[in-house]
Length: 350
Image (cartoon, rainbow, N blue to C red; front, side, top):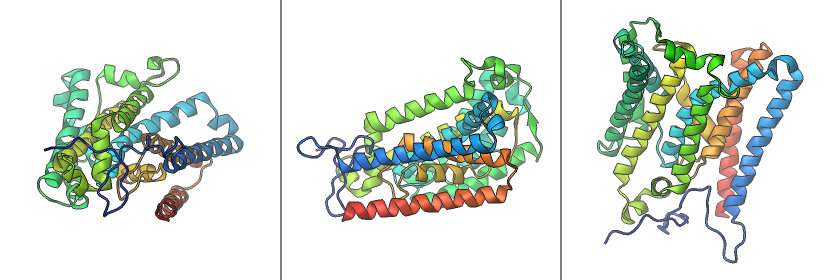
Protein backbone atom coordinates (compact mmCIF):
# COMPACT_ATOMS: atom_id res chain seq x y z
CA UNK A 1 0.00 0.00 0.00
CA UNK A 2 1.28 3.47 -0.86
CA UNK A 3 2.09 5.52 2.20
CA UNK A 4 1.54 9.28 2.49
CA UNK A 5 4.47 11.67 1.93
CA UNK A 6 6.68 11.63 5.05
CA UNK A 7 7.33 14.69 7.14
CA UNK A 8 9.65 13.60 9.97
CA UNK A 9 13.27 14.75 10.16
CA UNK A 10 15.88 12.53 8.48
CA UNK A 11 18.00 11.20 11.31
CA UNK A 12 20.78 9.49 9.45
CA UNK A 13 21.49 7.06 6.65
CA UNK A 14 20.25 4.04 8.57
CA UNK A 15 17.07 5.52 10.04
CA UNK A 16 15.05 6.00 6.88
CA UNK A 17 12.90 8.86 8.22
CA UNK A 18 12.42 12.07 6.34
CA UNK A 19 11.96 15.78 6.90
CA UNK A 20 9.50 18.47 5.98
CA UNK A 21 10.76 21.95 5.03
CA UNK A 22 13.39 23.25 7.36
CA UNK A 23 11.48 26.47 7.99
CA UNK A 24 8.98 24.45 10.03
CA UNK A 25 10.87 21.74 11.94
CA UNK A 26 9.14 19.50 14.43
CA UNK A 27 9.05 20.62 18.02
CA UNK A 28 10.84 18.83 20.80
CA UNK A 29 8.78 16.85 23.33
CA UNK A 30 7.34 19.21 25.89
CA UNK A 31 6.85 22.08 23.45
CA UNK A 32 10.41 23.42 23.56
CA UNK A 33 11.90 25.37 20.65
CA UNK A 34 13.68 22.94 18.29
CA UNK A 35 17.41 23.43 17.98
CA UNK A 36 17.26 23.35 14.19
CA UNK A 37 14.59 26.04 14.07
CA UNK A 38 16.62 28.19 16.46
CA UNK A 39 19.72 27.68 14.35
CA UNK A 40 17.84 28.74 11.22
CA UNK A 41 16.49 31.80 12.99
CA UNK A 42 20.03 32.72 14.02
CA UNK A 43 21.20 32.27 10.43
CA UNK A 44 18.47 34.57 9.08
CA UNK A 45 19.23 37.14 11.76
CA UNK A 46 22.93 36.88 10.90
CA UNK A 47 22.21 37.50 7.22
CA UNK A 48 20.06 40.49 8.13
CA UNK A 49 22.94 41.74 10.26
CA UNK A 50 25.38 41.38 7.36
CA UNK A 51 22.98 43.22 5.05
CA UNK A 52 22.53 46.01 7.60
CA UNK A 53 26.31 46.29 7.98
CA UNK A 54 26.69 46.60 4.20
CA UNK A 55 24.06 49.33 4.11
CA UNK A 56 25.96 51.12 6.87
CA UNK A 57 29.23 50.81 4.94
CA UNK A 58 27.58 52.14 1.80
CA UNK A 59 26.03 54.99 3.73
CA UNK A 60 29.38 55.94 5.24
CA UNK A 61 31.55 55.64 2.14
CA UNK A 62 29.14 57.19 -0.38
CA UNK A 63 26.23 58.64 1.62
CA UNK A 64 24.75 60.83 -1.11
CA UNK A 65 24.98 58.25 -3.89
CA UNK A 66 24.26 55.03 -1.98
CA UNK A 67 21.30 56.27 0.05
CA UNK A 68 19.72 57.99 -2.94
CA UNK A 69 16.25 56.60 -3.67
CA UNK A 70 17.17 55.90 -7.27
CA UNK A 71 20.21 53.85 -6.23
CA UNK A 72 18.22 51.78 -3.73
CA UNK A 73 15.64 51.12 -6.44
CA UNK A 74 18.47 50.08 -8.74
CA UNK A 75 19.84 47.60 -6.16
CA UNK A 76 16.43 45.99 -5.75
CA UNK A 77 15.84 45.88 -9.50
CA UNK A 78 19.20 44.26 -10.22
CA UNK A 79 18.61 41.78 -7.41
CA UNK A 80 15.21 40.88 -8.84
CA UNK A 81 16.44 39.13 -11.99
CA UNK A 82 19.05 36.91 -10.34
CA UNK A 83 16.71 36.55 -7.36
CA UNK A 84 14.04 34.83 -9.42
CA UNK A 85 16.67 32.44 -10.81
CA UNK A 86 17.88 31.77 -7.25
CA UNK A 87 14.40 30.77 -6.08
CA UNK A 88 14.34 27.99 -8.68
CA UNK A 89 17.94 27.03 -7.90
CA UNK A 90 17.12 26.74 -4.19
CA UNK A 91 14.47 24.10 -4.88
CA UNK A 92 16.88 22.13 -7.06
CA UNK A 93 19.70 22.19 -4.51
CA UNK A 94 17.37 21.26 -1.63
CA UNK A 95 16.42 18.15 -3.64
CA UNK A 96 20.10 17.18 -3.85
CA UNK A 97 20.57 18.36 -7.45
CA UNK A 98 22.34 21.22 -9.18
CA UNK A 99 21.59 23.32 -12.26
CA UNK A 100 24.60 24.81 -14.04
CA UNK A 101 22.53 25.87 -17.06
CA UNK A 102 20.38 28.64 -15.56
CA UNK A 103 22.44 31.49 -17.04
CA UNK A 104 22.44 29.90 -20.48
CA UNK A 105 18.69 29.25 -20.28
CA UNK A 106 18.12 32.93 -19.44
CA UNK A 107 20.22 33.91 -22.46
CA UNK A 108 18.40 31.50 -24.80
CA UNK A 109 14.97 32.59 -23.59
CA UNK A 110 15.85 36.29 -23.87
CA UNK A 111 17.12 36.08 -27.46
CA UNK A 112 14.33 33.79 -28.64
CA UNK A 113 11.78 36.19 -27.16
CA UNK A 114 13.32 39.24 -28.85
CA UNK A 115 13.55 38.03 -32.43
CA UNK A 116 11.70 40.15 -34.99
CA UNK A 117 9.18 37.36 -35.55
CA UNK A 118 8.36 37.17 -31.85
CA UNK A 119 8.16 40.94 -31.35
CA UNK A 120 5.42 41.11 -33.96
CA UNK A 121 3.12 39.56 -31.34
CA UNK A 122 3.83 42.36 -28.88
CA UNK A 123 4.04 42.15 -25.10
CA UNK A 124 2.22 38.82 -24.80
CA UNK A 125 4.36 37.21 -27.48
CA UNK A 126 7.62 38.20 -25.80
CA UNK A 127 6.52 37.16 -22.31
CA UNK A 128 4.99 33.87 -23.49
CA UNK A 129 8.02 32.92 -25.57
CA UNK A 130 10.46 33.65 -22.75
CA UNK A 131 8.52 31.45 -20.32
CA UNK A 132 7.94 28.62 -22.82
CA UNK A 133 11.62 28.49 -23.84
CA UNK A 134 12.64 28.38 -20.18
CA UNK A 135 10.17 25.57 -19.50
CA UNK A 136 11.33 23.62 -22.56
CA UNK A 137 14.97 23.82 -21.53
CA UNK A 138 14.05 22.81 -17.98
CA UNK A 139 12.05 19.88 -19.36
CA UNK A 140 15.08 18.63 -21.28
CA UNK A 141 17.20 18.83 -18.12
CA UNK A 142 14.53 17.05 -16.11
CA UNK A 143 14.06 14.22 -18.59
CA UNK A 144 17.80 13.62 -18.94
CA UNK A 145 18.30 13.55 -15.18
CA UNK A 146 15.11 11.87 -13.97
CA UNK A 147 14.56 9.33 -16.75
CA UNK A 148 17.87 9.31 -18.61
CA UNK A 149 19.88 8.56 -15.48
CA UNK A 150 22.37 11.37 -16.12
CA UNK A 151 24.16 13.06 -13.26
CA UNK A 152 22.72 16.60 -12.78
CA UNK A 153 26.18 18.16 -13.08
CA UNK A 154 26.77 16.59 -16.51
CA UNK A 155 23.25 17.06 -17.87
CA UNK A 156 23.03 20.74 -16.95
CA UNK A 157 26.60 21.36 -18.10
CA UNK A 158 25.60 19.98 -21.51
CA UNK A 159 22.55 22.24 -21.50
CA UNK A 160 24.77 25.20 -20.61
CA UNK A 161 26.91 24.62 -23.71
CA UNK A 162 23.98 23.85 -26.00
CA UNK A 163 21.82 26.78 -24.90
CA UNK A 164 24.71 29.23 -25.22
CA UNK A 165 25.50 27.92 -28.67
CA UNK A 166 21.88 28.12 -29.81
CA UNK A 167 21.55 31.66 -28.40
CA UNK A 168 24.65 32.67 -30.36
CA UNK A 169 23.26 31.09 -33.50
CA UNK A 170 19.92 32.90 -33.17
CA UNK A 171 21.52 36.31 -32.69
CA UNK A 172 24.54 35.79 -34.94
CA UNK A 173 26.47 37.57 -32.21
CA UNK A 174 24.34 40.71 -32.50
CA UNK A 175 22.19 42.55 -29.95
CA UNK A 176 18.44 42.28 -30.61
CA UNK A 177 16.81 45.60 -29.72
CA UNK A 178 13.28 45.52 -28.30
CA UNK A 179 10.87 47.84 -30.09
CA UNK A 180 7.67 46.96 -28.20
CA UNK A 181 6.83 50.04 -26.12
CA UNK A 182 4.61 48.19 -23.64
CA UNK A 183 7.61 46.04 -22.65
CA UNK A 184 10.04 48.93 -22.41
CA UNK A 185 7.59 51.00 -20.37
CA UNK A 186 7.83 48.51 -17.48
CA UNK A 187 11.39 49.69 -16.88
CA UNK A 188 10.52 53.39 -16.73
CA UNK A 189 9.91 55.34 -13.49
CA UNK A 190 6.38 56.20 -14.68
CA UNK A 191 5.42 52.53 -14.25
CA UNK A 192 6.58 52.35 -10.62
CA UNK A 193 3.87 51.50 -8.11
CA UNK A 194 4.24 53.54 -4.91
CA UNK A 195 7.88 54.04 -5.84
CA UNK A 196 8.47 50.31 -6.33
CA UNK A 197 9.67 49.10 -9.75
CA UNK A 198 7.40 46.46 -11.37
CA UNK A 199 10.35 44.03 -11.60
CA UNK A 200 10.77 44.19 -7.82
CA UNK A 201 7.08 43.41 -7.40
CA UNK A 202 7.47 40.42 -9.74
CA UNK A 203 10.41 39.23 -7.67
CA UNK A 204 8.40 39.60 -4.45
CA UNK A 205 5.54 37.58 -5.92
CA UNK A 206 7.87 34.78 -7.10
CA UNK A 207 9.54 34.74 -3.67
CA UNK A 208 6.21 34.55 -1.84
CA UNK A 209 4.93 31.77 -4.09
CA UNK A 210 8.22 29.89 -3.71
CA UNK A 211 8.06 30.18 0.08
CA UNK A 212 4.48 28.91 0.16
CA UNK A 213 5.28 25.97 -2.11
CA UNK A 214 8.31 24.93 -0.08
CA UNK A 215 6.77 25.35 3.36
CA UNK A 216 3.05 24.81 2.94
CA UNK A 217 2.58 22.17 0.24
CA UNK A 218 3.14 18.45 -0.27
CA UNK A 219 5.44 19.33 -3.17
CA UNK A 220 7.71 21.22 -0.79
CA UNK A 221 7.76 18.40 1.74
CA UNK A 222 8.58 15.90 -0.97
CA UNK A 223 11.39 18.11 -2.25
CA UNK A 224 13.04 18.16 1.17
CA UNK A 225 12.41 14.43 1.63
CA UNK A 226 14.06 13.56 -1.68
CA UNK A 227 17.07 15.72 -0.84
CA UNK A 228 17.37 14.26 2.65
CA UNK A 229 17.22 10.61 1.62
CA UNK A 230 16.06 9.74 -1.89
CA UNK A 231 15.86 5.99 -1.24
CA UNK A 232 13.79 6.42 1.90
CA UNK A 233 11.54 8.83 0.01
CA UNK A 234 11.04 6.21 -2.71
CA UNK A 235 10.19 3.56 -0.15
CA UNK A 236 7.70 5.96 1.42
CA UNK A 237 5.79 6.18 -1.86
CA UNK A 238 7.27 9.32 -3.43
CA UNK A 239 7.93 9.15 -7.17
CA UNK A 240 11.48 10.48 -6.96
CA UNK A 241 12.02 10.65 -10.71
CA UNK A 242 8.85 12.63 -11.30
CA UNK A 243 9.75 14.98 -8.44
CA UNK A 244 13.13 15.70 -10.04
CA UNK A 245 11.42 16.34 -13.37
CA UNK A 246 9.07 18.87 -11.78
CA UNK A 247 11.95 20.59 -9.98
CA UNK A 248 13.95 21.16 -13.16
CA UNK A 249 10.78 22.37 -14.85
CA UNK A 250 10.40 24.84 -11.98
CA UNK A 251 13.99 25.99 -12.45
CA UNK A 252 13.35 26.48 -16.17
CA UNK A 253 10.17 28.43 -15.42
CA UNK A 254 12.09 30.77 -13.12
CA UNK A 255 14.73 31.25 -15.84
CA UNK A 256 12.01 32.14 -18.36
CA UNK A 257 10.52 34.73 -15.99
CA UNK A 258 13.99 36.12 -15.28
CA UNK A 259 14.68 36.34 -19.02
CA UNK A 260 11.58 38.48 -19.53
CA UNK A 261 12.61 40.69 -16.61
CA UNK A 262 16.09 41.07 -18.11
CA UNK A 263 14.56 42.04 -21.45
CA UNK A 264 12.61 44.79 -19.68
CA UNK A 265 15.70 45.91 -17.78
CA UNK A 266 18.12 45.92 -20.73
CA UNK A 267 15.69 46.64 -23.54
CA UNK A 268 17.35 43.98 -25.65
CA UNK A 269 18.22 40.31 -26.01
CA UNK A 270 21.83 39.13 -26.17
CA UNK A 271 23.53 35.76 -26.24
CA UNK A 272 25.73 36.96 -23.34
CA UNK A 273 22.76 37.56 -21.04
CA UNK A 274 22.80 35.65 -17.77
CA UNK A 275 26.58 35.24 -17.77
CA UNK A 276 27.68 33.49 -14.54
CA UNK A 277 24.12 33.54 -13.17
CA UNK A 278 24.57 29.91 -12.18
CA UNK A 279 27.46 30.81 -9.88
CA UNK A 280 25.65 33.79 -8.37
CA UNK A 281 22.48 31.77 -7.77
CA UNK A 282 24.34 28.84 -6.19
CA UNK A 283 26.40 31.20 -4.03
CA UNK A 284 23.32 33.11 -2.84
CA UNK A 285 21.54 29.86 -1.95
CA UNK A 286 24.58 28.56 -0.06
CA UNK A 287 25.13 31.65 2.08
CA UNK A 288 21.39 31.65 2.68
CA UNK A 289 21.65 28.27 4.39
CA UNK A 290 20.83 25.77 1.62
CA UNK A 291 22.94 22.62 1.90
CA UNK A 292 24.71 21.54 -1.29
CA UNK A 293 24.14 17.94 -0.19
CA UNK A 294 20.39 18.59 -0.15
CA UNK A 295 17.66 18.18 2.42
CA UNK A 296 17.66 21.69 3.84
CA UNK A 297 17.25 25.27 2.68
CA UNK A 298 15.14 28.38 2.92
CA UNK A 299 13.75 30.77 0.33
CA UNK A 300 14.15 33.72 2.72
CA UNK A 301 17.82 32.92 3.26
CA UNK A 302 18.46 32.66 -0.47
CA UNK A 303 16.78 36.02 -1.12
CA UNK A 304 18.89 37.64 1.59
CA UNK A 305 21.96 36.09 -0.06
CA UNK A 306 20.99 37.72 -3.36
CA UNK A 307 20.52 41.11 -1.68
CA UNK A 308 23.89 40.82 0.06
CA UNK A 309 25.75 40.08 -3.18
CA UNK A 310 23.90 42.80 -5.10
CA UNK A 311 24.61 45.36 -2.38
CA UNK A 312 28.29 44.43 -2.38
CA UNK A 313 28.42 44.92 -6.15
CA UNK A 314 26.75 48.31 -5.85
CA UNK A 315 29.09 49.51 -3.09
CA UNK A 316 32.14 48.44 -5.07
CA UNK A 317 30.86 50.25 -8.16
CA UNK A 318 30.12 53.47 -6.27
CA UNK A 319 33.60 53.42 -4.73
CA UNK A 320 35.25 52.75 -8.11
CA UNK A 321 36.82 49.49 -6.91
CA UNK A 322 38.03 46.95 -9.43
CA UNK A 323 35.80 44.04 -10.36
CA UNK A 324 38.55 41.55 -9.50
CA UNK A 325 38.49 42.73 -5.87
CA UNK A 326 34.71 42.29 -5.93
CA UNK A 327 35.05 38.69 -7.12
CA UNK A 328 37.62 37.97 -4.41
CA UNK A 329 35.23 39.32 -1.78
CA UNK A 330 32.39 37.15 -3.12
CA UNK A 331 34.66 34.10 -3.11
CA UNK A 332 35.65 34.74 0.51
CA UNK A 333 31.99 35.00 1.51
CA UNK A 334 31.18 31.69 -0.20
CA UNK A 335 34.08 29.91 1.53
CA UNK A 336 33.05 31.33 4.90
CA UNK A 337 29.44 30.22 4.35
CA UNK A 338 30.47 26.65 3.46
CA UNK A 339 32.74 26.44 6.50
CA UNK A 340 29.89 27.60 8.73
CA UNK A 341 27.63 24.97 7.14
CA UNK A 342 30.16 22.20 7.83
CA UNK A 343 30.58 23.30 11.42
CA UNK A 344 26.81 23.44 11.86
CA UNK A 345 26.38 19.93 10.46
CA UNK A 346 29.11 18.55 12.73
CA UNK A 347 27.35 20.19 15.65
CA UNK A 348 24.12 18.42 14.73
CA UNK A 349 25.86 15.05 14.61
CA UNK A 350 27.45 15.42 18.06
